[in-house]
Image 1 (tube, rainbow, N blue to C red):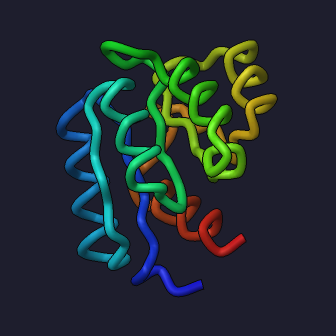
Image 2: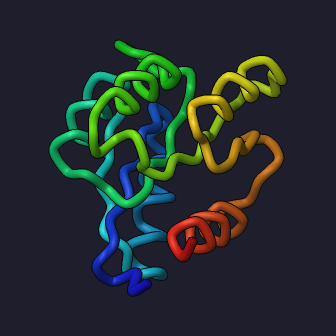
Image 3: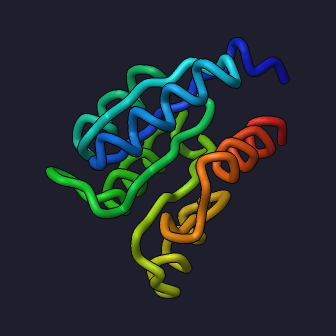
Length: 127
């Protein structure tokens, strides 16, 4: 699949992480990014923009990532959109809950480097 025509939505309230990821995807991978800093904005952008993949934080203002994900899954388009969770929480129950909602991967922020996320996103987009 050609990444040039692909789009990812990054929903992250930590601005340095958000803009670092967005710039890396745009500049290095040539993937268009759409950014949201809270769950409500993320949900709105997801439905409007219909990205190929969503990078989603769980702990978000206005609407948490799990609630946002559940609402996306109720949409015809959203039933099958690829989602990767980015979280500060290493919580097996929460990870299991997201897996039941069809999440492709669950990444603990403390355990990753930006290159690892770029690699996972690239692999997920190619599936």
